[in-house]
Image (cartoon, rainbow, N blue to C red; front, side):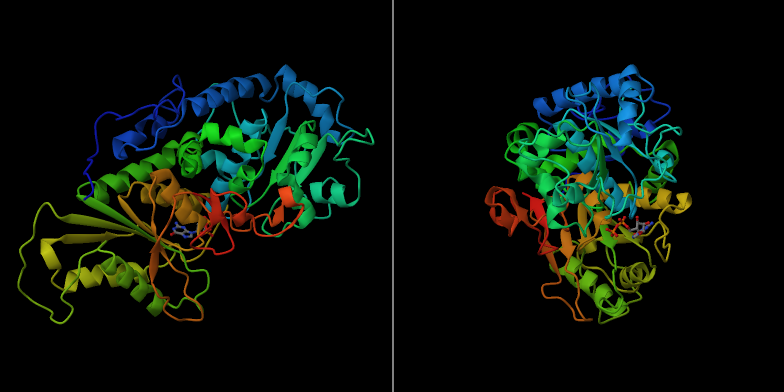
Length: 482
Ligand code: GDP
């Protein structure tokens, strides 16, 4: 039985248990302090240690932000020459956007956690619309790289000589420190889904010891690489202090970092109040089809119905008759279903099912879908605003059903603190059995994980190294925190 929370006039927990700093200008980012008017309180409280790390981070960010003395004196090291003997006062992680919005949010969270762990400062390339989608997360400063930042194109490639894996394989970096050469002052961390074993050494302890000295690290991934940090024995004790509940990493950091801009917040709250707020229970169903050949419309729509009915998420209908009579409705049993999908067909089918047939148990079901954009149009601002609004709306649900392997769904589940049911990925047009499974944790999955086992110095399965990093249910080769 879910507890009903209506929209409140005042935030229920304005600073999210101390996660958010006080003192921001509330008008420039309404969502930051208003989210708990719409959201039910999270049962997961951030640790005091995490709060302390965040407050320290905020101070460091202000001290090292663009145009500060610390920043200005570190800029010359962007040339990639030898890193200075004595570490610079400010050290950076640079992030730039690529891939879909869900992937971006997860990779940016990974970059931020890396900065937290290593006393670095995270600066981001704003790309086409990052500043239109999100508020500034850190008080009295900016995370955006200034327009006059010397690196204008972040399209570093696998063949770049400053790529960490290339530095290793060409013996242009010394890991054990024996030959006395300093590392370069700019290193490109190449961690996309197609990285190689050399790049994977990034996650290992001796490599991190060397990278400590590098003032500028370019962090490039489309993945949620956080489980990889937990495999590192130097990082793990610190991470476990920050996150005693390991499955809450994205839940807390996502709520800390990603506040919808006022434009997006207006869309979220108008939609929520119009279509979702009145229902006693809100069910989010996120449908992502990666291949219509593997997952044809008929199979997926039946899969959704099978899963939601079997798991008791949605009520049964009497499919045998089209009755003209009215059935008794229980006003305490209203369900609003939010569907997000690039296509409208699944919505039509579910909506018609509950319109045309009598529903069991006096439940009233309403079905809603904000957009059907037909295809991914990343970097078009009007499209990305809606994608972000929809991920956020999913996170306001009580119950979630998401699609396997979709980072769009991970963002919704993580921000919401919800362990979803996952629609198993259909293969070759066949209905999967079971149609859906319950996720083991609300954390996102590291889809293309490192397969280099640092402590054994060989390739293998990192799901067998520590008990809190296991395979994902939706992507069998992926890694996730539990
Ligand atoms: P993933 O590919 O499912 O892991 O998620 P991403 O967010 O990284 O990339 C998919 C992109 O396609 C999204 O960012 C949107 O641009 C678009 N998209 C996919 N599904 C939806 C949807 O349900 N609603 C909207 N508005 N856009 C979607």
